Image (tube, rainbow, N blue to C red):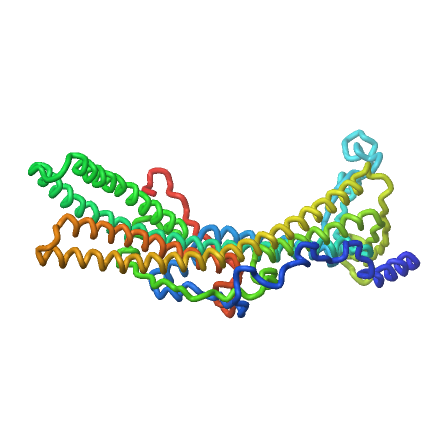
Length: 502
């Protein structure tokens, strides 16, 4: 026994010296990451925290805050973080000794062998029933402890994999946070644009009604042809037909916003009752360097963590080919009628064991597990490389898209000034008696069309700016805020009983 314990302690001293996991390495495609974005000349540091406050809209700020606090996708991701952290603690427990306690008590009252009939009349027994039975009670307490010496790193690698999975879950949580905030911002600007489009549509319908009435009057007087009257009436009906679609789109956007902030549409409508006036921002967004994507995009970090988890599991599965050494100890004490109840000084006992178990034939299970772990590692490496490539493409495309939409907005803005000048000119000509009212209505209709295009262009610029921040990743919330990743419970209420109102 002493020899076995000495060997086990020597093996314990070597624990940590062997790690069968592959060496950590970056996929080749990430090692070749370009030094800059082709579509950006601004490589200044990227500071994205609460960037949407630049729109100077308190309604938007409050909605994003509610989405980050109440969104159900974030709550689900937070629960996955807690689950992964608990699984990591489960894996860590295998690195520590297992200790258990046991205790039992027994009582017996049995007849003496051969004297079962000694107490009956005529049975030949001289004693009574009490002298023909044995009464005994016993007690015992014990501890059991066992520890597996992780000589080849199986337990350590499984724990490392579980920790990497927990880290990936945290980065997934941040990814969901960014997605929830981004969808809230995009939906808000969709609502702003939809309201403006409905307003312009109603004004256009009124204008075309006036235009159709005057064209009909001119047709009755023989001053115009029926084709012009038909064209104006069709134009009016087409605009009228678009109104229900725009109103339905607004209702749908408000409903989606309610889901994002965990509220019903009625509550969202109440919060949006005031005029919505976000200020567009046209400043260039510093993109930083492409290498920053590896650290600031949570989906890239999550893919790397899963690659590390797969690498550690390869080492854990390889370690299953080698023997495992287990130490166990079972101290305890016992007592009874003879020795007294739990006479520790005289009745203690201890059992020390060192065991070695080595696989000989497993039917190919271990080799298959190693192959599966290697395949999972290769798949994780491919996924990480694809994630990096996708991140670079999205960032570069978002930078270019933002610049193009800024230029488009400027062009439409200049076009609006021209349309306003034309409408003002036709109004002055009509007031001076040198122009007709129909020409003024046509110029006003052209102005409304440009206003509609400008509203859509403003929404596109805002979403393009959102696209840059989403593509670059980063921490949109305050980095100093505590418990950024932590409990995010969903309130649970008891179901109504039968016969009660829900």
